[in-house]
Length: 219
Image (tube, rainbow, N blue to C red; front, side):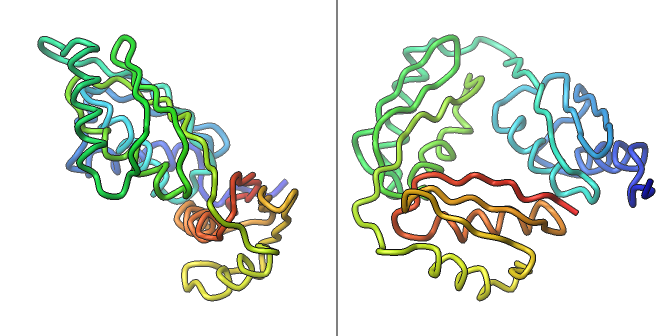
């Protein structure tokens, strides 16, 4: 059996140090466990934004192959009502120029559910991102659907060329398959999470992509 390049003990320690290092996170109440490169985050933070930042910080650590996100949001002080959160969410979406109008917002027990249609993954992601810092927010369910306005005759060549152009990606280690002209499956391996994220960004930029199945392994 091949000895792992990074031991679970080393990964656990590095993740804890990275969480302590990240200025946007109060890591005092975050627990970290590692098993064969799979990191489980537990405990609680004060805001949903910190929960998201904790996961991103964890992915930056070498040797992390997967993240199980079990952090809870324990808001301190008087939490806003669902009605107040909804009002602020609607206003935030209205003023964000990267998000099209027509996104529907539902709030229950501090959790926001987003619904509606957009043309690009960029718009879908930004609709969620612009709400992460709302006071009292405990989580977001992003149910926005992608309905591209236009679709290229064949998106696979476009994706392959985009991967080759990127300085962040070792394209020869990645296989691309397209089903029904809109669903992209990625297989192969990448060196780290940053490269995997760069691959997904490149794929989502292709016109007509509605779903991405990411089977890339982190070496």
